[in-house]
Length: 303
Image (cartoon, rainbow, N blue to C red; front, side, top):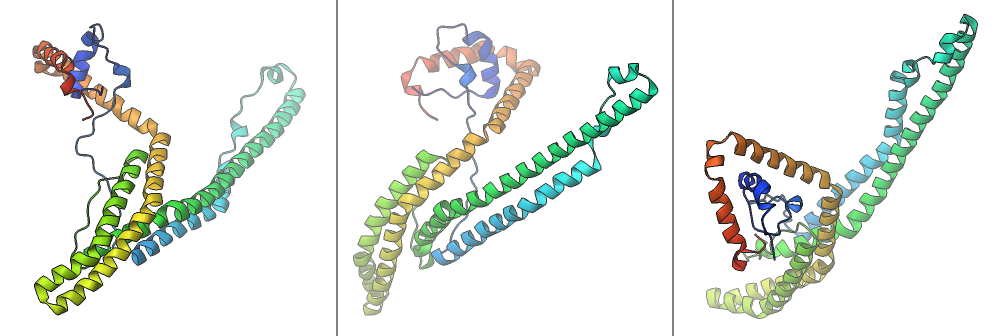
C-alpha cells in the first residue's frame, strides 16, 4: 500500500498523537509530495541541430574540465602562498619553558616543519583538484558519447514530423530510471506503429485533400515519417533508459538537498501549527479525517 498525502501543517499536528495509535505510520520515512513539479528540458528540432548542440555542449564541458587540470592546482598554490597556515600555529609549552636561545631554536625548527606540512597539504590539494578535473574530462566524454548525443539524435528524429505539421506524442517526463524505461517502451511502440502506418495513411490523406498532388506529398511525408519514427524508436531503447539512469544517479548523489528541503518544510509546518489559531482548533478534526482515510484501502496509493 502507498502512503497517504498530508499537508505539512497536518503532518506536524498528527505526529505526536498518531505515533501512539494503532496505525502503522513511519513518519521518519516521510517524503515531500511535489505538486505540479517543473521539469526543464531541451527541445530538439531535428537530428542535425540536436546532435550538433549536444556535441558543442559536451566539448565545452570537456574543455573547461581540461583547463581545470592546470588551473585548480594553480589556485591551491596561490591560496597556500597568500595564507600560510604555519604562521598561525601556537608556540609549544616546552619551548616557552626553555631559555631564550632554546626557544628561538625550537621555534625555528617548529616553523620549518610547519612550512613543510603546509606545502605538503597544498601539494596534496593541488594534486587532488587536478585528478578530479581529469576524471571529469573522462566522465563528460563517456556521458556525451553514450547518453547525451544518442538522446539528442533520438529526440531530434522524434521531432521531425512536427516540421511538416504532424503531431508528436508526449510520453511524459523522464526523472528516474523507471520513467526512462517507460518512455522508451512507449516511444518504441508508437514509433513503430505510426512509422509503418504512415506509408499508407499519409498518401491517402493527401489524396483526399489535394488529389494526385496530395498523394505525392503524402508519399514524401510517409517515407520521411517512417524513417524518422522507426529510427527514433530503435535508438530510444538505449538513449531514454540511459538518460533515466543518469537522472537517478544524480538524485542519489544529491540527496542532502532534498533532506534539507524536507526539514525546512517540517519546521515551517511546526511554526504554522504553533502560531496559527486554527491549528489547535482543528487538531482533532484533522486527526479524525486522517484516521478515517487510513482505514479505507481505496484511499491509499501513490499520489
